[in-house]
Image 1 (tube, rainbow, N blue to C red):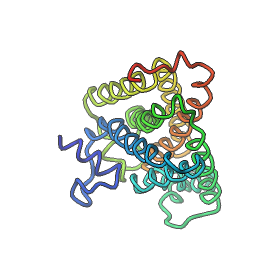
Image 2: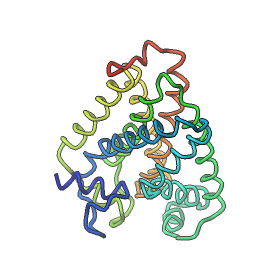
Image 3: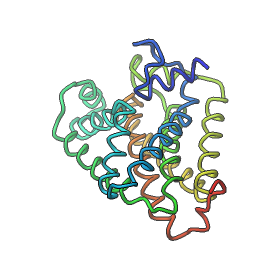
Image 4: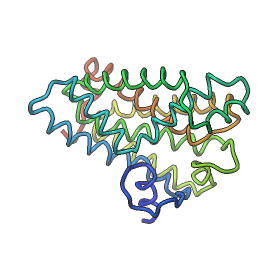
Length: 253
């Protein structure tokens, strides 16, 4: 279970691993499970807040909670990617900008857009599928991140995500897939598989684009994949669940 501790210590604020100890490749198998734990925390907060707060305020609280629980790890990667991808003209330039600790105009604009979109999505989740979406979307996004770790090479010899890129046994992906499929079907019904498929394809497509721009994946690139996968899962869930209620009929409810 050491890999589970590393997954939680790396992806969340929980101090369950020694400081500075990098996660091994086995930790990535638990990424969707960590996403499920984050989703459960959001559901608990949502249930408490719905007693007396309007949806727009609840959406802001859920967004802030997600940023705090993850140490804004993925959001920070998205911001760096905005600066690097749009501020550089070669792969070397983009990788250099990704390492720069300063925040540029592209990061500010991208971050503002990301917050606005996620805030509105979290505030607009339909009641019939709200619990299921809040539980499932962090699972789906972290499975998308897992797929890009397996499918694409790492751009640097060293880095935050380098240890996660090491070759591992097939069970890493199989376990992550089992978690993602189970959460999708149990919490969202057959429609959850639609979201899982869409997020998986989108994550792989985004990973391919990032490899073309950077020469490989980086820790920041993984963060960007996660953030955009969260947005896609919520967006599709909000768009499809009301239109196809039978498809999004979860057995657990």
